[in-house]
Length: 102
Image (cartoon, helix red, strand yellow):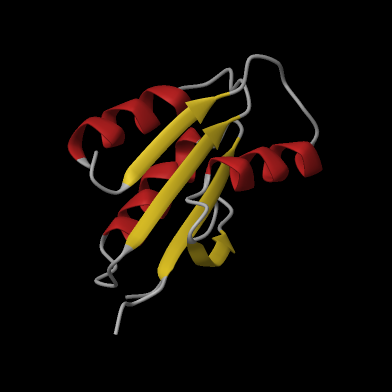
């Protein structure tokens, strides 16, 4: 039986202080197949740099993007969803201030 794809969606905006903890907690999960989508909303801190660094090390699971213009929170979440794998059976929005338990 094929296991369903799980997509973790992380909308970010100026979360450099908490983002690494969040990303580590997600990438340490042992469920497969899993996809992590992080979309930056034109942060003015180091958020996007942190995402780019993690993407280099985890290209197999982590997909990042950056919006051209700053948008509201609902539009931001919707754009994250658009980037998720269309075959994902389960979606989880994860604020970058939170972390997943193993």
